[in-house]
Length: 236
Ligand code: ADP
Image (cartoon, rainbow, N blue to C red; front, side, top):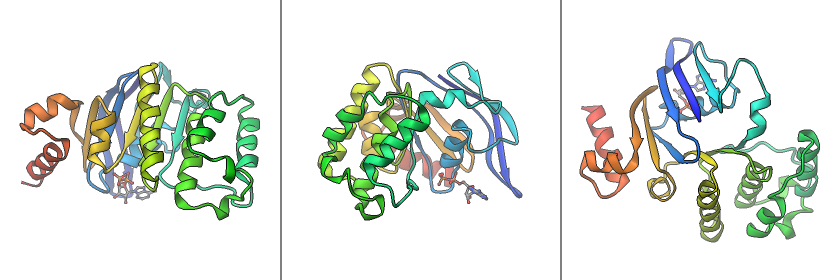
């Protein structure tokens, strides 16, 4: 469970997150949607402890984020565009991360197999295609079997086979009790994966609730239509 209370963040004079209150339930998947610049990445960075709030509190699994780091061991994070040590091979990178975390990676072999990464393991990261880099990022996020998965545009750049398998894996992880928090512009992906939806506009939460309730509220069969209606209402 992630609890966010009265979270405010300003960059210069711009209020990027404005008194956000959220409870993100454990063991379920929540999708964050909203127009570009609405604060989605900034919200995720706060949960990861990468950005300090101007005011407000965040708790992850009961632990307040007052400069503590230990809670991050329970999080697998897949950034939109990962920065890697480009001269390292994939195998070296995986070994390096395991050493830093001083931890076995119980899901490593399963992920390497699923993403067919075996032939890529001895290539330096700088030589990998965009899709393969995404597969490496997804593997790093999941290999330590974390309780909470935070995924920023997880399937962008993946080929259909990899994307399909990855989504299947995320669903089974969720069924096994993992908490998933993801952002994506692909509404069908949120429909496939998420139970709850957070709709952010200009740093405000415009909707937070079950996806099925939102569709009912907006009298839409598809999430894309429901979100488009919310955006129109907001612009009006
Ligand atoms: P989203 O992920 O929804 O596209 P972001 O959280 O990346 O939105 O950004 C929200 C707003 O905050 C944008 O207007 C962006 O320009 C601004 N912003 C984000 N990070 C910084 C930063 N480090 N310094 C100044 N402004 C920032």
